[in-house]
Image (cartoon, rainbow, N blue to C red; front, side):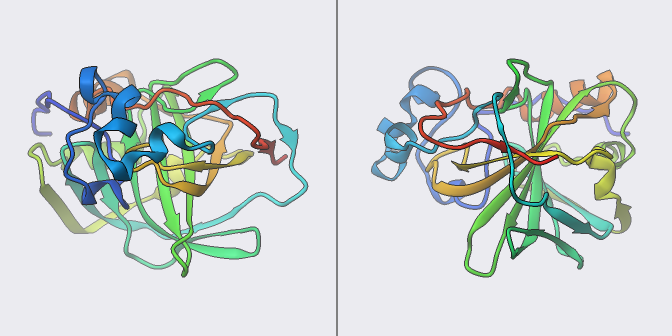
Length: 247
């Protein structure tokens, strides 16, 4: 494995939209989350929005709808360091989710350290976001908590060929990433309507966060934190939204 060097990370990316904006934003000081809404007119939703993410996951109602159904084929490695996070592109079919009578294609997944969502007052060392989009551009994101434990095989595949430089991409068409190794066996989901967790903080995003964490080794968590930095937005107010849990 190549030696992993710490990076100076200014921000994380929920990369579907935030990369289009040039304003400097980050997680500390004058460009930190409390100031995002003041940096640019397009970022106003970050301070004015009423459906912002992430949130505290507690006190949920029992959902009256079925849990999402995931169908993920093994994927070739195509990992990009965009200067904010590591993004694994998803292109091999099938890779989609069925939820609420709608089909969503999986576009990519990326990493936040520590977790953005909190579960019953607890944060986790890491959270993965699996970003989906339907044919009309409606976003649905699956969040997976990661706690310290045993080595994760799929994370290890990624770490063995991780791009260290900003805008660098490492690809390996012969690899086969098992995405279900990044999911817990028990799939109970919290659901709420939220937003992107980075500027421009666009709302009307379906959030589906699994309530059971997966495990990664202490060394894997350390290496990923060195690569992406502390790139998590603080929890936001639930306001009048409904939080449900599928069982």
